[in-house]
Image (cartoon, rainbow, N blue to C red; front, side, top):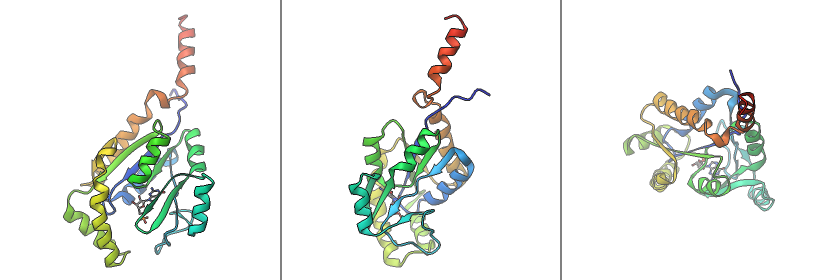
Length: 213
Ligand code: 5GP
């Protein structure tokens, strides 16, 4: 098979919490194997039970976070609820240059910043829940957060959803496997974009020379 070198893409999945984004991200990473890496964000939010530092997030205090912002070490950053979240820049550029795609679980504020900084590498996907009732049910049964946190997330969901039109693709997560398949279709097509296929220039040059053109 002919392999053409390519630059990786930045795949952003945004959604209100409870739309099934974490599960979809996990399944997507499993399915894509070495072709895709997850961007591990830095946050000032305390870890939830079961979360591992360096895997789920880099957990830092506010002073450390502010230092990272000053040093320009974050590709984007935002305040979500009462905490700060940001994307470390170095691992992202390393992966993209190596031809690997990077998956981001960031909110609309971060997505807007990426669109300003890296529009060419960016593919934005918004995930919607199938209904308000289903969204509420998923937030309640998650069981990791206190009732007032759940209520605030529900209120915030409307705000997050209002940004749906800033995304390139919108997926309704009515059925997990189907939603995963839709995201993978987007990936397959986006990977074929001419600009991402950095090895094409040489390939086509060789083709033309070989054909005497
Ligand atoms: P959680 O606290 O539930 O893990 O995340 C809360 C929200 O913060 C989610 O909507 C998630 O997408 C967003 N988020 C997580 N990491 C980042 C980040 O690095 N940047 C931005 N802008 N948002 C993030």
